[in-house]
Image (cartoon, rainbow, N blue to C red; front, side, top):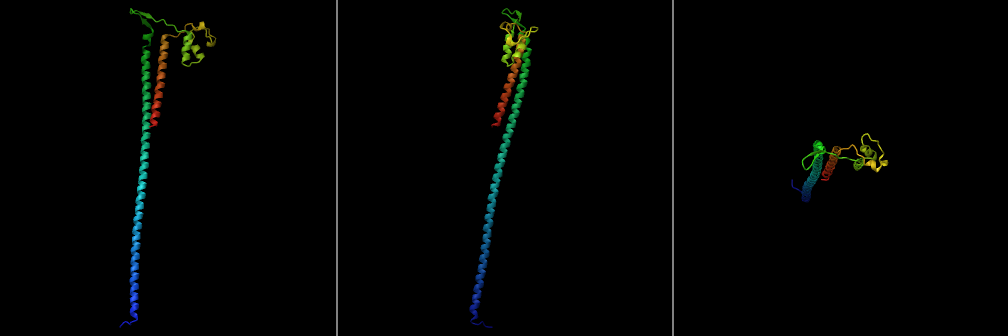
Length: 207
């Protein structure tokens, strides 16, 4: 059946509208797809950047933790070494004390003259000497008096003791003095070792 003349323009318009609609739909679909691809790429990039930052943060925290752990271990090792050194010093001082005391009798019982003749030691320590000696170690006046009184003599207060009384002999011998000095020397060296160990420990904490 032949198409009427007035129908041809209508068909043409419909065809053009259809083509335009198809082109618009394709353009919209293509644009939407492209927008999705761009959005997904941007999202993936942001995720990658976030993961990278998170990884770097974790690595920094792990490095800081390892550094703290290493520093703590060094401090522990320093403390153990300081303790070991101190204990070794104390043991060495005890051994030295025993060795020195074994020689006391040899060097306090007699003396030898230029002719190699031996004579008994005759050394007198006065009560006043012992008072001064003990006071130098921080003993109280009562303690120094008690330590300097001759065995069997009347005890007199140091404050009331005359100058002549301080010149009376005490019962302290050379052997007693040397033994006391050896013990005091051990205590002083032990305190020195303790202080040095503490200083080493503090130095280790500051590393």
